[in-house]
Length: 446
Image (tube, rainbow, N blue to C red; front, side):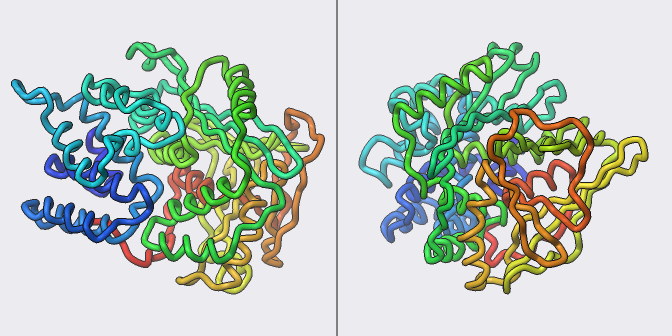
């Protein structure tokens, strides 16, 4: 577990000397920028570190660390608090020193709240979060995340959604649950859940200038994280949930789940789903009432109206097409081809997602993403790529039944289901598909 947590930060082995610096870096980026004085203070503190660690810190100070960084740090520190107790005779140890150093960056004593982030964590009082570290307790979100990163064959991940359509947007409550005996062994319920409540705007384009700015600012990130930044921009473009809407959506999700859930942010839920795809070989996507893409240890399924694609995982062969389908200038569509090798369970499914073919992205590519990425994420419609023409056609779901059909009916030849890029990466990861995603503009790995 310890090595997996450090791996997410770019290290093959634990680096205890770095722990005290992590809160400083997180809070320094909390407002989206690092001031010159903050940079100097952190660099001065790091002067006595080994050269590789100094370089790692300097690289994190030069460019935004990405949407996942605060969660990677929060989960690591929470885990360390439970396995790395304070030294005898020292009631504070590394935790107090980390807090003191973070307080040098921000004057208010709120670093821990800002560090953990997320909607539910923002509501917790600072003293409650301090107690989490001081007593070595693990929050539900950290526990479910930790289980996702382990090899827990008995745990069953599940994705569930509650949607409510409105004229201009769709309200969403998206959840991931884990169930199994290993949860109850640790004193938690046999099923535990986290969920993100958000909105999906309808027929609302992103601002191309804003998309260009975000793509440039986060060009150094891994491709999947870069797309998550744009996904968060889509969520921000809608009207926030009102307290009444939040209460109603939460109650509906609890009823559907059969258990309580802990609310997390969209980015943290995405981070959890990425971990499940990479380490538990699981992915699930629920864009609407009647559309579901699901991959687990046993089966690969696309449930749809009027039919379904359902093949045992052992019978699946998956690969990425060597050349993207050409779209507008500077934009292509990367296609993941999934075929059944069994005559008993025939089937063929192709999943497509946009990819930038040049850096910086062309104006035409930015315009396409600004216009159609929200449509790809719209839970009430589905875009299908015509591979020969490099264009798409829309399948609009309206007044459809709650459950899809059961007859096997894959997509017609020459068609590929357009799915969000971050979901596409999870599917490829869950199927152990390796491919070249393109060179990053500037790596921030050590």
